[in-house]
Length: 304
Ligand SMILES: Cc1ncc(COP(=O)(O)O)c(C=O)c1O
Figure (cartoon, rainbow, N blue to C red):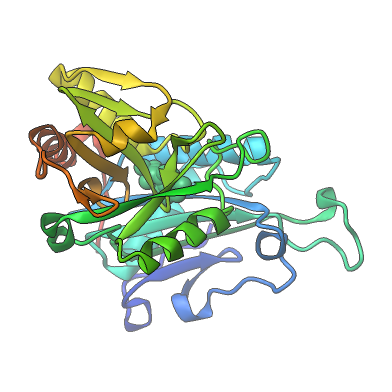
């Protein structure tokens, strides 16, 4: 394992780990022929650090290794080594609040070969400054969520519990949302129930009960945090298919993501939610950030 570098000017703004070495972001590259690029044949995970400590890093590593298994991908590092690389990227970049990605691509099979077993899988990681799905200012002003009629790629085709780069549906729904003057979007499943959006899970609160989809979605670590907070706080929770009408008629709607935690929604397709900013969302949002101070969820980075 290479020794993580000490912070230096070249790592200002971020640090990557590619082909077994720590490199500045501008030097982190993948081949044009990597199946991760040509076939979206890859899996990844995104953890975060907040005030100098990883949040629920074990949960992110568990999900990443589970995704690797399901995709028949492998990385040449143990769990302890992966942790070291992720810490190394954050430490070198000198970031307190960071977006930390780990990525495994299928790699490049020998020229002319079409057998994925012949490709050597590649591993990349990088740390960037923390990324918000929507800034705290935008959250306060009220995010306008578009519920797209586009369907998320079917779970029978691509397992949504594997964090994946099959985002064409999500990206096209974002264009639709912007065309309509909305801020972000979510997509539905074949039964017309709300699934997820570009980088987040969706929750609706109706008559004090918190609802979120039980299927067809990535099992977000932030989603899990919200579920656990509901249990801790005694907030009724229903994990079941999430009809569009339930979201449109909800008292409160919020998103969950590593990119900002619990993000309140102000409007659904231009209609202001009567309950915005809602008390349940606010309790969960406060709870989400309070957990960042609990030792069991923190893995502090040791800066030089
Ligand atoms: C499609 C999708 N759904 C949900 C999420 C939320 O997952 P997490 O809470 O682990 O960030 C993400 C995160 O990027 C995502 O890409």
